[in-house]
Every structure is written in structure tokens, then in C-alpha cells.
Length: 170
Image (cartoon, rainbow, N blue to C red; front, side, top):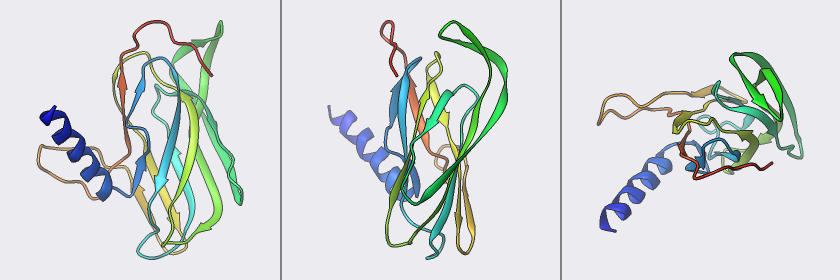
């Protein structure tokens, strides 16, 4: 129990320093998951005017949630390995989702949500995010490196856990 609390505290501390994070810390393999990206502040005091989320290749079926005052643009790309969904072979999927508009002032936070299907394999998924501000841009795309080395702009991460039986939901 004590070890679990220490791990939870470490995860929360890491998220407190990250500025674009995922609300969800884990999701079940081969299931549809709501992914909520939290934007905690602007770029050095400048308001956020766009957020682009790049989806890992193994994440498919993405559907962004509309936000009042923001436009949505998606970019599709060809999958290197086709997947099957509802008896159909899928060869392309949404690879990027961009919300533009706002603006979101630096002193406020907001959330941007996508529903997507997670891969059948368990493991960590990293979502690279680009935050465009009135003045400046930040790429939240750094992946963890060596133990003990902190990254300045970490990519949001989701831990995909194994499914415990057939899961089918939308």
C-alpha cells in the first residue's frame, strides 16, 4: 500500500510540472477510450490559439469533441498495417487533430477531447502535442530518456493495460 501511494505521488508530481497532460493515466487495450488533453497555461504568458494532437499509429477511429469557439481540423494518414473494424479493412485513420480559435488566456486552463480506439497490445502510448500561442509555439513531444534525466516539454502518456476479456464499446 505504501509503495502504491509513493508511485501515485510521483505520478502526480510529474503531471504538476507537465503543462499539456492527459486526464486519463491508463486505458484498456483494444477498447474505445476518451482522451482528454489538459492545457494548463499559454506560452510564456501568451494566450493559446491552437492545439494539435498527433495520434500514435496504433490509435485508430479517432473522433474529436467539438468545443464552442474553436474549429476542428483532422488530418488522415495511411496506416502501415491495416486494421479491421466492424468487418471492414481500415487502411487510413486520423493522425492529427487540431483545435484552433479561442483564444485561451494564459491564466486559464481548458481541455480538448478525442475518442479513439486503443491498440490490442499493452504498453505506453505517447501523444505529441503542439501548442500554438499568440506569441510563440511549444512542442510537447519529448519522450522519457535516461533515468533521472528530466525533459522540459514531455509528451502526454497513456499506459495501455491488457484487456480482461472481450471489450466492445463506442
